[in-house]
Length: 172
Image (cartoon, rainbow, N blue to C red; front, side, top):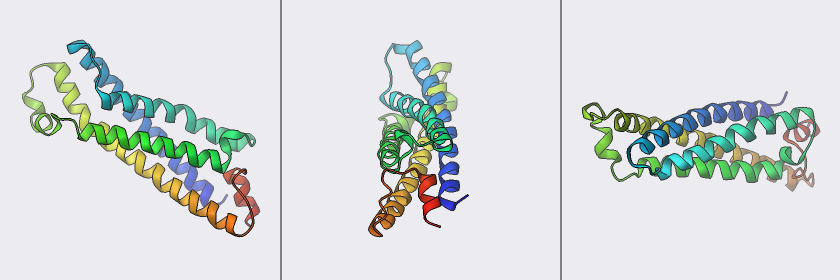
């Protein structure tokens, strides 16, 4: 196996695990805030969206690459889709840390009497951290894949419509 495919596998596994954590914390935050005021927080909505899209698409992209080339495993589609995902994760993490009450609430989670508010307070920081970590991992993979594809394309070997695994086989 090539280094690019192994790095891709590790990145996808890490992003999927981080997405599960972000999705779970976002769902818990949404449920807790629904019990209080029947609204939803924007950062938890973005966390849910990024988590669901990642948990559904990452394993499918890996499976499609292992069992045959399809439109979801070509380099061009992968670059576009991974870019959408890392942007969603950065937005979810940024909105979490940019919440107006975040700095006040995080310092005093233990003094909050309401259990739902305490859960929202305690879930905010890990949600933001895992969202940013997933975004960074996907951004780095996207940048490496873009450089790899551009380098191969400059050698008159267009790989934009090939899978990552096939491009690695052709390079040896």
